[in-house]
Length: 330
Image (cartoon, rainbow, N blue to C red; front, side, top):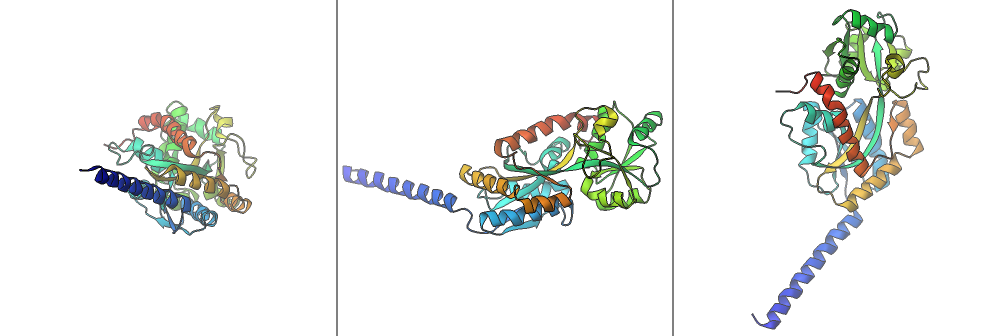
């Protein structure tokens, strides 16, 4: 090959690389140019879905495109999560996850098909809903008295949850674990839509759920909230004590949190654009007001690396609870 041919080959390679990088940079700088799909790995109508739709609407305004919610439910959120994990990391497919998809899935399944830290780029923890303990209208006594009854009568007190292996179930098991292995029977249901009516009908003594799911029934006298798993009492329920107040467990705080993630490989430029947009969304007074009516607290300061660290901390915190409850599937 003579010198002119060598020079031509080098220049062609240089021009191709320049055009490719320029095109990539331009695509990142102009993102987004088409609708974004926000996958909710749970059925429509639930608290996660309601939050996701409010978030998607505001995110779309910030980014200048439509953000469409796509419900892909099944396997406690694993089906939708896997679909996002296997999608193109171009910023046009996002996941609206929870503790069930990002923490409990890997703790409970012996052969998980994804790793929430390695297989996703975390955009932001976007909000949480405080967890409460509520009792049936015919169950008398304070939360403290109920726990004392459980100590004296192992297995006679029951609590329901939205399902085996859900975060609500794990909070109930965590209470038993941190109180030295308290024996309270767990009754799983297929979602809060079944567990709450069962509680109101006195089919079970107690349930673990989000504040927003039961506060209206509490106000109507159809059930009674006896404790809330927050650091301080809620302004909505000033007469209801915290779990820490009653039990002496100083750090017993639990909230059903949501996180927005993208497939691994998303560029830093698009990641930062999504983080900035999400932060602005969760600072909007109008959205904050709407979320407050659902008893959801927006979060706008746990993004990127901080969000990944948040998940890692939750994995460490809940692993012994899952092990003690013998929840890991064979």
